Image 1 (cartoon, rainbow, N blue to C red):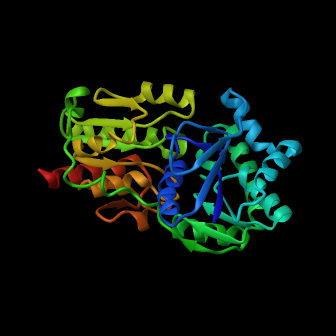
Image 2 (spheres, helix red, strand yellow):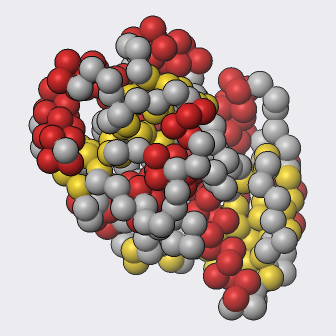
Image 3 (cartoon, one colour):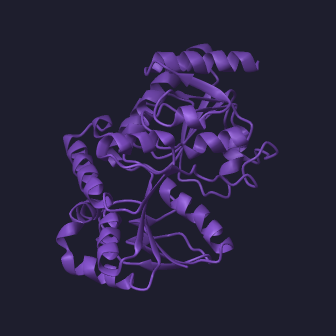
Length: 337
């Protein structure tokens, strides 16, 4: 079977793209021929062809290009024509869902929408960000209604979309590589590299307002009063420069921002920590929680989104405030003594 996977990016910075990368292994084992169509890519793979379509270079222009892609009718038609002869198209995010819908109509290709969710606009501080996400969600919902099949990475997302537009489908949780993430992973030189002192808390993920990293730092400030030598390691790529600057100004001594960490060394970070923590206020899944727990680490997170499905060996905090999160972090650290 010829399968086309459509996503705006094929990048190591994105959880959706890591999901695509994992699914390629399954498609290869099943004998399918796969081509990935994306605007930009920095992942190389021998499991599929990757066709990079291109887009503007500046981040602002890229966001506008993706949001109003429906205006570029010639470009849409060119991509649609590339899909002739494919049996199935799997679209993960708008505006590629728009392309998939048109390919289905023109060539009668089976259209599967693989839903990784869209964060709530209200969690973003700037009005421009909230407007952008509202429009993005609106255009996305319009372009997925014609899909033949829906796959969700959590039941939380399944229920969300069912309530929004009345569609339903099956849940397929994100596969995590248990050969890389397991209890026998050693810390390597991570503690020495960053001069960390115990207890060591770890967060992995995008540095974005809906991930509430500022709230996590506020909780860490409280934890420091009881555990003065505590370290907080924040692993991830910032998505908004102004937010990154705010976090660095807010962070006390003991907070380390590592930036992006390659997948091959990420297990060593989990192995180095005493506790995995996140203050995220929206999650369609939450790959790092699964990775941390596979590495034998307890987790502390808010009881939001998909966390009831994802957390197996951790604490879910009902009250969504820094004091409540800090209290559970300190209680868990006390129990580890």
